[in-house]
Image (cartoon, rainbow, N blue to C red; front, side, top):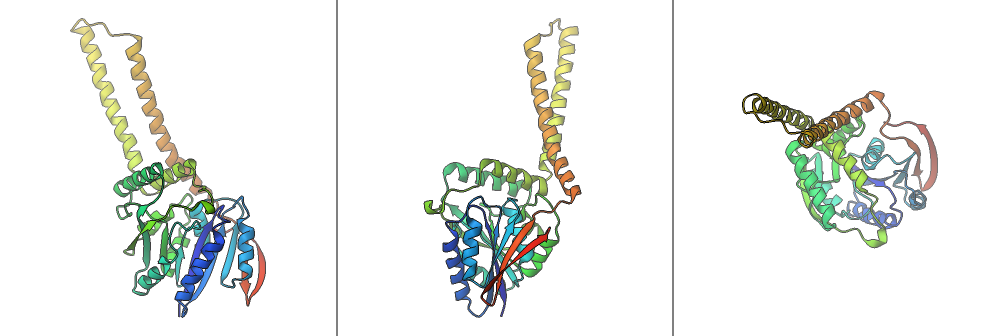
Length: 325
């Protein structure tokens, strides 16, 4: 008999939670010879997600609800769940039901066949064209310049062995890109492919804003690739050489060809382009320096405010005045 943990990060998902719980209960019923724990992490939701989770937990003894003190983001929320998971293997799935919970059964079977990391990768996604285009571009760049084993359309649905979970919990890294960490650890991930469904209207709108997507993009590259720094160095060298060639041309034209140097317009073009490149390079360096500063502060990746858990069908709430990291 094995114990499996299912971790669900929750952020403004009140409407989908009852249906999601039913689906993961079906997974547990399908593996009746094993034990399960369902860990829902409320990532500072502004709706009534925590109240819904508390009500659901009253009737589900296998369920634990973790409330974070504020919104830390999807990856820290999953890591908070991983830090509390007790299972021999731990699965993580989004709460919006765009990923099929029934796939967890197949992932468990693959784990039984000694696959310590099983990732569910998107073969296709029924998202709006701009969203799909941006996501595909991101993963293409990430595969080329960071981690080559990243699936073409990415993943955020996975199952990992207890050993892998322990290693992730030991990594004290702020602004961590969890999916990149899983691949970086190795263990020869097994990839399952599936078609990601469009989010149903009754489950509300996605809170995955453009600002969050851009931060996700930058965090991912800064954490696993030195390409932006190399790009900055390359741009610096190219524009230095161009500037040198142009300076030589101006001197030769003035001294030997009798050509007067042009005036204000050409000078301003050069100055503006050079200044723009300098600001770009400073911005790239600043991103790396900021994350380096953030790491030296040793602030926790998440803060657990409280945990609701049940024993013998009785709900007991334990307030946690503990900072988890």
